[in-house]
Each structure stands twice: as C-alpha cells, then as structure tokens.
Amino acid sequence: MDVKDFCSGMEMELTAWKAKLYDTWRKFDKLGTAEREKIQPKIEDLHMVLEELSGRVEQLKVECPADWSPMKKEINEGHVDMRSKHEETMKLIGEASPVSVPG
Image (cartoon, rainbow, N blue to C red):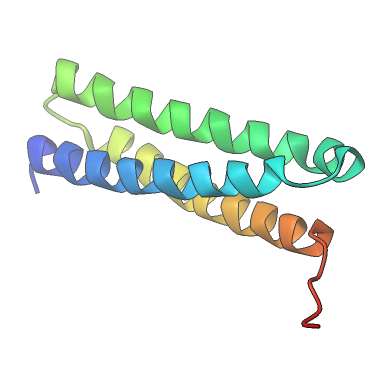
C-alpha cells in the first residue's frame, strides 16, 4: 500500500469517526451537569486523539517520506487508542443516561 492510498483510506475512516464522535457529543450534551463533569475528560481525550490523527494524516500527505512505516504504525496505534477511548466513553454515557421505562 502506498502513502496516497493509506492517506485516502485514513481520511475516510477519520470522517466516519468524526460522525461517531458527533453522535457521542450529542449524547454527552443530554446528560446532567454532574454526569458531564465526570465524563468531560474522556470527551477531551477523544478530541485530542482525533486532532492528532488528522494532523498526522495531513503531515503524511504533505511530506510524503520515503519510509513512512513509523508514522503509519503511529497512526494505526492512535486509531486503536481512539476506538478504546470511544468505547469507554460510550459505556460511561450509557451508565449515566436516564433509563426510560415504557409506560
């Protein structure tokens, strides 16, 4: 896989992640103040990881290094980190969300 194909694929994945995170933030915004304060650090972590990944992909597109495997490894690890942070955050949001009881 060459760097252009990798960057193109990662851009598509990051766009999908941005949509997922937008949904996460909407759910987060519906929580009460106390719950939001507990989960806020997780939300900030997700923002940082997404921005870092986006920056790395942009850097790859501009620099196009001959050996880009270290950066590819870093991006892939960041992607895994974002997935685990997202799952953890969604679990916390789910636990903090009010349960609706059918009436």
